[in-house]
Amino acid sequence: MPSAHPMVPLPCSVRRIQRETHDTFSVELSPGHEFPFVAGQFNMLYWFGVGEVAISISGDPTKPGRLTHTIRSVGSVTQGLQKLKPGDVLGVRGPFGKGWPVETAAGGDLMFVAGGVGLAPLRPAIYYVLANRKRYGRVVLLYGARTPADILYKQELERWRARFDLQVHVTVDHGTGGWQGRVGVVTSLISKPDFDPGSTTVMICGPEVMMRFTEAELEKRELPPQNIYISVERNMKCALGLCGHCQFGPTFICKDGPVFPYESLRRFLAIREV
Amino acid sequence: METLERIVAEHPFAKGLKDRDVKLMVGCASNVRFDAGETIFREGEEAKQFYLLRQGRVALEMFAAPRGPITIMTLEDGEVLGWSWLFPPYRWKFDARALELTRAIALDAECLRNKCEQDHDLGYELLKRFALMIEQRLQATRFQLLNVYA
Ligand SMILES: Cc1cc2nc3c(=O)[nH]c(=O)nc-3n(C[C@H](O)[C@H](O)[C@H](O)COP(=O)(O)OP(=O)(O)OC[C@H]3O[C@@H](n4cnc5c(N)ncnc54)[C@H](O)[C@@H]3O)c2cc1C
Image 1: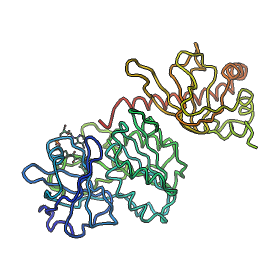
Image 2 (image 1 turned 45 degrees about the horizontal axis):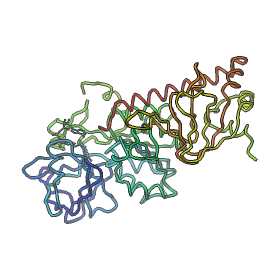
Image 3 (image 1 turned 90 degrees about the horizontal axis):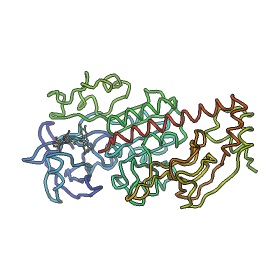
Image 4 (image 1 turned 90 degrees about the vertical axis):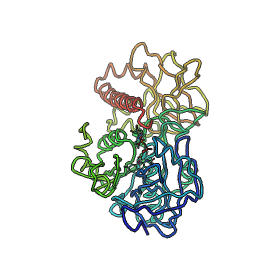
């Protein structure tokens, strides 16, 4: 059960903290009861006395008893959250927004393209698809990070890579520390898997430039742009479509997104002032 | 038995090439393999071949003292290694090292340059492919420079 009123945070205690990289960590919360959500939705996390931030749910939607978020510390609130320890209490408002189109994608091939911490908002969709694997054709995950040390969920990626029903390709922009894997930008992975462009749905999450480059590369492979979905981040306050902080062109990221068909945003992504 | 002709024809580089062009290429081709860790070529050496990679992974490295070798990018099966054979003075600009067992088709540079001079249809087809590859690598380098995940 989510919070009773969308403006009132639900107190949740921290069950576990998992350090993912030097600046990114996952927080597992105990909501006290089931907290159903769809892959791609986000919560507003409120650390009492410090502030509130929008964070996507990065856990498994088929296990709604656990609520996991993966956070990169970039500023005042997220750096504060880095100090969380088991037993601390966070306020949670949500879940908010529209998620990934995992249902409409059923029956066809699926490609996930993640850049940096963008793997976190995609992970629930991957869990969902793996839990319903028979309903999908080929499933591919392409993931790009800055360096080997910035790769999220390393053990899980290894487990996924060992599966026969999921293709995983990982690359880094800069190969450091004896890295024997692939070095190159994430778009260079798009030529790796075999896919049928007409029946493939692509879900992309990462920095906006990365999503634009990815879309351009997919277009070269004749993938219809209407099959492409992206998740967009903007400064967020109320998360209810009231305050206007997250307005993007004619849409509000909080209630119309954060997941959008690429076509619906293409025009606005090209406008620098938006 | 896999013939050299079939292997070349099935490589993504040859997609859309006419049979006669594949045959002309095969006249300059040979099968090669490199063990993990083996150097394929070094910066400054004469670029006598280029490679259609069939299996494995190759690192393109630059040596920048005192940091040591820096991997610029890696290449894998289905990709092409080397374009310095096309442009005078035909010298490699990077080191290339196999990161794992790598199998490839090596194409002899002088043999292929001569054929391209005699047969501009073949030359145009090859140059179109290399131009596209160079465009893709330039685009990737620009993207890399943006350091988008910082
Ligand atoms: C729908 C949605 C989902 C999100 N999901 C996640 C998530 O799963 N994990 C996560 O870590 N973050 C996520 N974010 C981003 C997160 O909300 C911001 O990083 C957070 O609000 C920053 O707050 P702060 O107080 O720590 O930083 P601030 O003090 O507000 O900002 C400090 C500095 O960091 C920069 N900054 C702000 N946001 C980002 C960012 N996303 N990336 C890089 N630099 C930034 C600011 O421009 C500023 O320079 C999401 C945002 C939205 C809108």
